Length: 449
Ligand SMILES: *Cc1c(COP(=O)(O)O)cnc(C)c1O
Image (cartoon, rainbow, N blue to C red; front, top):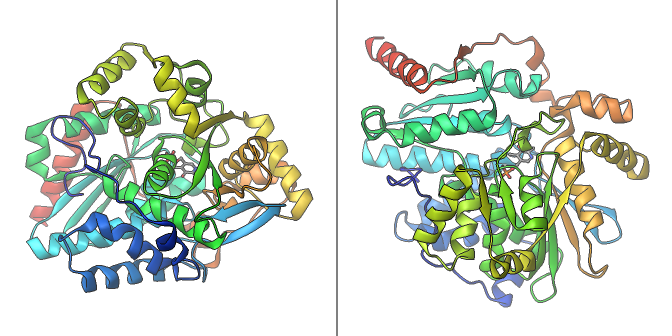
């Protein structure tokens, strides 16, 4: 958790997956979200924290969510469910893992008398969720890179109107993939990394995935799926959320399949169709948190797909950097056993938002709408519950929702004045030295002060 990315540039994965029996999953039904979170994540914590401390931390984490069920299920159509993952402080699913990560960081840094500089890249929602989880914490400075002009006003303001002095929002002249590449370059610069005690909260950090596994178990337990099958549709960008679904399946959840839903940036759904993954230009869409072509967590899945052969993974990742990654027929077949691909462009997304509003009065944000359309399109058996993950609150993307329905969803009361708050951020070139210099200067200023 503290290291983020491994020093050789690889990603951490568990040596083995803990398995939950059908009885253990059945026993989760009706428990509080926090209790399920405790039971599902506990095997990964090991001896790092004692049970009482960790349980109290998890309970505190989910108390800040504004819905009694934390992640409520709504039925959209017969046996097609929406899981609302937008009842956290920044209104996107990122809060569910990030709040836990913030508390884990705080506790462990305090216990060890250490401090860290967290540097993160965001396509919109990770940044605000990370800032909200780390603001005002003494042992942490947090720097967030976001693509200038490519996030929604609400998303930007959630990052730039926080006035705690340990929070630094940086607009980069570039795309999210540029931001993520800068982040990786900083991680791969050992001198810089040690000098600033760098750490990360992007979903390259294993603890993020850990916190996201929980709600798959919550949904399965609520719908009585410990022996019978369940399916999920997941709006996907960096492959983090859906990888957590894959992890849940490896841990024993009877998941028949995971629908991988993309917008016009369809590199991942295309991989399932063709077996190849090719670099190309990013298209700006109505679902900006999915405007990603280099899905960092895909590497974790590839590791399992290639029988945990690190050298083979490295070879494939290099091939991708050089232009194209190609799966063998066996590997593609294995991927298709778990994942079904789905793609929807902006026009389809607006239609879906309108259609769902008319059918049931449910307002969907553009990301969630793609997940709902994907779930409806890829239901292979009516008796298997399909759960589409709603990854953001509609008020986070009011323009698209208004365009589709004529209704402008209001922000919840705790952020009703967001559009009037003062913004504070810096714009930097897409340049490693410039960003590193900025981080050093800011940390030095704080030391003087
Ligand atoms: C981050 C995000 C996604 C994509 O999740 P990944 O884990 O990157 O695949 C989808 N929708 C919303 C609203 C997001 O914030």
